[in-house]
Length: 458
Image (tube, rainbow, N blue to C red; front, side, top):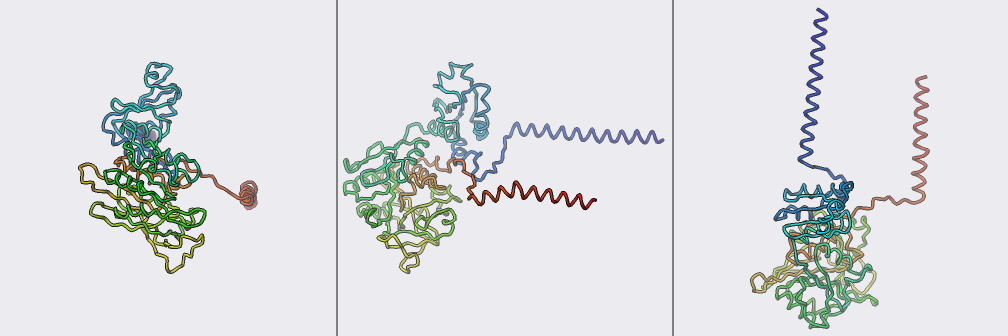
């Protein structure tokens, strides 16, 4: 009887174990099938360093036909690009990745123009582009060049103290130029004083903070360009009168903007928002965190932008133009009309209280079909210069503005962010405290606790 009961109990235990093993095996099989079909990851980094950007997702998912990314490298090094390329393939069923060893297939590598291993080629239809680097920027840039074809030209007005695209110092625009190159734009300088006409190959004209007055022929050239269907970004600083760095009023250009519905005020915005002080900005930098729903800024929700030495503006639509606000300064900002003193009383009752409009976008009705003029006016220019364009969302704003002006709305988005520097900077005293705590204090606490437990048990 006992033997029969024992056998029955053993049989039951064997049955339990068998069921458990089958359940575990089934779970593993289902997990492997799902992992093979669906590649899902979670990026816990603060700036989503290991996730593709909104721009890449937008472009790749919108590819109108089959695309192939061919990665050329030695077979033993295919893994160097696999993780990144798999992310592209997972975005769209139209994107396929193939791997080629140039040592085993030299003809194919030679045909693609591959000189160095570790290179990717993006092909969409009959168009092929070599990625400039094995990074998201490089591969997405190849997608953009395939899709856009002809390179568009952004012309920067020079000759009146504007920021220059060949200047790599803090006040230059060399980084802005580099960003435009990645979005498949060429940049060049034009002097409207030598020839008062915007070149025909200019897709967009940029007026980047002139410090001297424009002559009337220059103003007339800009007027003719935009009102004839051209596109222009005009950044105008407040006319500060500080002796060594005077900025001209530029009445001719401001009068033109007023005729389009944008009236620039002769003031300087001071931002007293404590958030700006937390991120290391002084009151002369207007911090913006809220935006309108215009396409240029609609994707910037939750992103901060900063505008050093900015002025406010008033906007209204006219019979020929339609103008809308892009963003305001914060409610804790004020505008002073005192432009000739280095020290300003923020509590002056004459100051105008914020929020104040900092930027606007408008369209001009040319009367011709498919020939709409577009313009964007910003009351600051330093925000796009080398010393500030990398601040938070400034680079996205700059590129989104050019995209909208050039009718490349499909490129408007948030770009890949560079890796953050997460190093901790400590004083010598703080460093000594950490060293003493980790090397001596914590081990001593553990030893004392151990001795107390041993003594208590004794």
